[in-house]
Length: 87
View 1 (cartoon, one colour):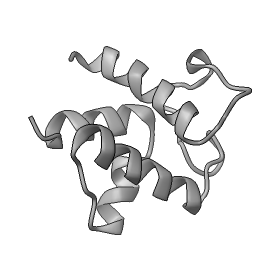
View 2 (spheres, one colour):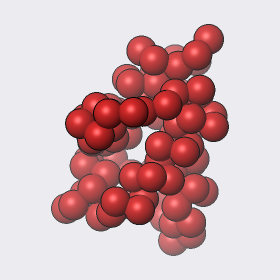
View 3 (tube, one colour):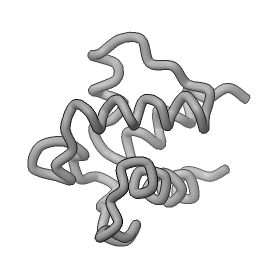
View 4 (cartoon, one colour):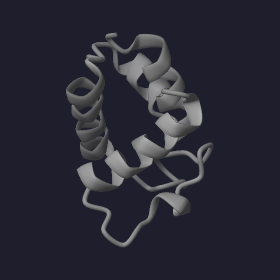
């Protein structure tokens, strides 16, 4: 899967996992922060995203600092998945 396709897939998965019914993938900027002033996600949402990564890509994030870095934006998540997913 190429990077842009993965970003698009992640956007759909984020919307579904977090029940963001009023949002479309087009509304999520690849580089926008997922937490705080960007998408406005919180710590509960970060747990949901960690479950999403484990369930869909076989990636288990153990280190909180690594998780924060990996989930800064859709682009960061896509790059993290490309580097760490189980083949």
